[in-house]
Structures are given as structure tokens and as C-alpha cells.
Length: 222
Image 1 (cartoon, helix red, strand yellow):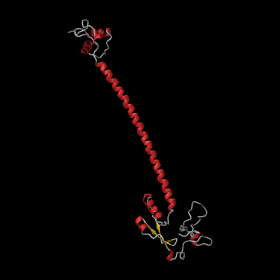
Image 2 (image 1 turned 120 degrees about the vertical axis):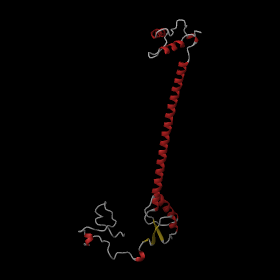
Image 3 (image 1 turned 180 degrees about the vertical axis):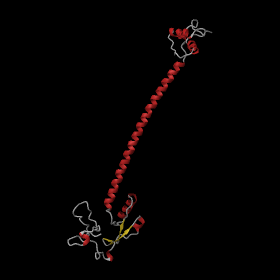
């Protein structure tokens, strides 16, 4: 649309774009054609047929692929790229720049610079995220290694304690069997003997368990 056609009241505020909009108000002075109002689109303003769909005297052709770009004549034709994603549009713009083909609906250099800045920022963000994830994995590995080391040490200590518990008393620590209680003695008498010789036992142990404990700390009667 020609810049001669301005929408109503676009000069009053920055919030209104100057691109053409048909006036539709019932009392709109521009729609009614009042004197002093900006001119509107009307019969008689149409571009000459031989000049229509031209850009700097070049025919504008909508393209969607590099093959269509290759078919253009850069001297007489210009390209228009429709709305599409950055991944598809960027190769088309770069191909047009390499082959000196004009693009009517964007500034090639500005678009490529903005795209490169966007890609650089995204790459930097991805590298930063990868570095943070690697650091978190290293911390997790260190914590796991520390935990495993502590567990191993605890297991070794438990195994050592178990070995000491399972190891019978040394020969020099064994008590004579002559005065050791037997099954003929009562539980109270057996516990009293164990107390006299500082041998640990639990109150829940049965008589048979107490006698086994006595046997572990006495000499073999045979």
C-alpha cells in the first residue's frame, strides 16, 4: 500500500501505526470524504497495470526453497519469503545473499546478524547448562564415593567386632572348670558365678545360653 494513504488519526499518538486501515465509523470524516481529511483508497488510485507487483522495477516472486531461488533472474526478479521458521528461512536468506538476489520483505544483513546472535546466545546457554550438569554429577559422585567409603569402614568395623565376638577366649584367660556351674545349678547361681568373674550376659538369656557362656570361659574338663 502506498504511503500516501494514511489511517485516520495516526499522527495523534504513537500507539497507532500509519499503515492503511479502512475507516468504518458512521461519522468518520475520512470515510465521508470531508474536506481537509487524508485521502482514502478509492477508484482511480490504482497502480498502472505494467507497474503492479513490482519492486524497484523488478517482478516480485514468492519463493519457498533454494531451487525456486535458483530459477530467479536477479536482474529482473526479486524474491519474497513467506512466514516460516528460522531454521528454514535462514538458508534461503543466505542463499539469496550469495547469489545477489534481492528480498523485498526483510533486510538480509540485519536478519543474518540477528540470527547469528541468537544462535551464539543459545550455544552459550547450552554450554553453561552442560557445565552445571557436569558439576552436579561430579558432586553427586563425590558424595556417593564418600558415602560408600564410610559404609565400607563401618562394614570393616562390624566385621572386626564380629570376629572378636566369635573368637574364643585365650587359653590364659580360661577359668578352671572345677568350680564352674553345671546344669545342676540354678539360673541364679549361674548368673552369680558370671558376675563374680566379670562375664557379661543379658537378663533374657536362658539357662542353656548361660551354660554355653560358662563353657566358653572355662577350661575343657576332658
